[in-house]
Image (tube, rainbow, N blue to C red; front, top):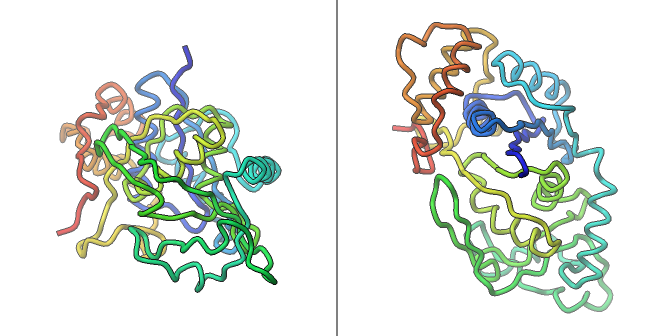
Length: 296
C-alpha cells in the first residue's frame, strides 16, 4: 500500500505569515497524523516575483515552528526540462495549442468565474501572419467534479467557467497549473492540503492530470485567514511576517482556527509539546468547512 504523502509548496515572493502557517500546519498534521511523509517544495518558477532571501526565511520559519519536512527540498526551477517534455506531449496529442493572442485579445471573451474567458481565437490554428506567444490547454464541455474533504462537492465546466487556459506564458515561464500537477506526480503526493483560495484551480489541474494520465490526489482545502475587512492575508496585501518568538502561542491560534480546540493549558508550552498534542488529536473532520477564517 502506498503511504500518505503530503506537501507544502510556498512561493518565495516574501516571508511566511499567519495564513501561510495555517496552511503549512494543516498539511503537516494531516500527513504526519497518518504516519505519512510531508514534503517541502519551493515554487520559484516566477522569477520576477522571487524575493532575495525569501527561501532562507521560509526554511528558517518552518524549522522554528517545528514543521520539519522529509527528504530534500524540491525547487521548481530545477524541473524545467520535465515541464517542457510534458508540453511537447500535450501539443502532439492535441490537448494543447499555440496561442498568438495578446493579454488584451485573450481577455475579450464573455465573463467567467475568474475574469473574461478566452474566446478561442487560436483554437484551430494561428491566424495568418501571427506568431505564437503562449500555449493553452484545450478544455472540454465535460464537468469536472472535485470531492473535497473539507469544502464538499465542487463542480466546474471549464469551457464555460474558465476557457482554454495558459500552461506556458508569453514570457516562457511555465504556468502554476501545469507545474504543480507535474511536481505532485513526480513526488508521489497522495493528499493536497492547501488554502481554499486554490479550490477553483483544482478542476484545471484535474484536466491536466486526465490529459497526462496522472493520478488525482485527495484534496482538502483549508479555509483561508482573512483580516477584519474580509481580505485574505497574503504577501501582496501586506500581511505581517511571522515572528520568530512565541512559537507555541502562534501555533495555538492556528489550531483554534483549524477547529482543533487545544486546551488552554497548552497555550504556553513548548512548540514540540504542542505539536505532540496536535498529532495525537488531529482531526480533518473538525476543520471548519467555510472558505474563510477570521474577518469581522
